[in-house]
Image (cartoon, rainbow, N blue to C red; front, side, top):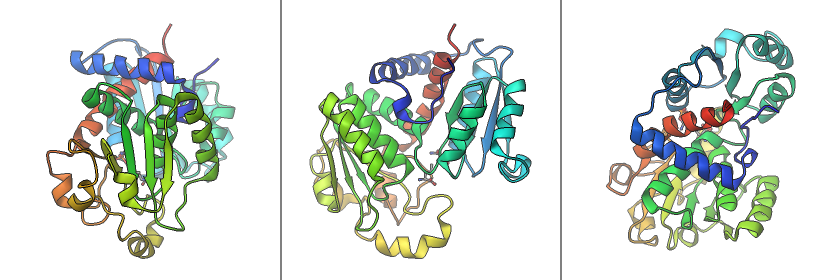
Length: 303
Ligand code: CP
Ligand code: NVA
């Protein structure tokens, strides 16, 4: 059976941990290999990207494969032809699809119609490859997943993947969001089910101080995600008080590290001072995207 990675929940906690430990090893070795020799991977992007596109292309190249970047204007997914037709063309030529889409249902349709693995490079619902690199970063720093991770801001794709992965890995997770920006109820329900098994504590609040209290890692993401640009002014108003700044970090653990998936909007969800401080691990997170994606490909194409 083909292995997709559309949600962090597509891998078990055990396999996720194995994949992260492998990624740490690949990083140490500055690994180059031939596991993808003769293989091609289509990278479909409906939105812009720096980190995701570059790290996927480099990961594929370092493993001996060949990436084919399909820009938003190139194939006009679902407009020039239906998603299911794109899937049934690509699977005749390439060995996997990596796709960044507006609507998560597009990934489900690609997966249903393509007989090859499909990897989520960000959708409106999840950003699993980001969360994988973030948990590698947490593990590198803390040596365990048994920490408290706080997310302050918009309960979006990144927050969803972090909440679910925390619940899987036994990590305590607290989310603070403004009223009216509640997280997806199905994601919360799933996270609570997973947390009941792993023992992690999931807290959802509108109080950023409560969420940040004793946190080992404080995470934030933009208030206006790609595709929400028309809501920007309203969001900037609604998210006042949900900034990660040095006052908020006073409530966190004294060794707190600050995380951000990037790109960051300094002066909105995070201050310049905190972004540039020694507590910030944002570029380590970005670096780790390459290694977790290599590790993911090794798992997908093993044997
Ligand atoms: N964090 C992240 O996914 O960055 P890009 O949007 O640049 O790919
Ligand atoms: N939530 C952001 C993440 C960018 C990597 C967005 O969807 O634009």
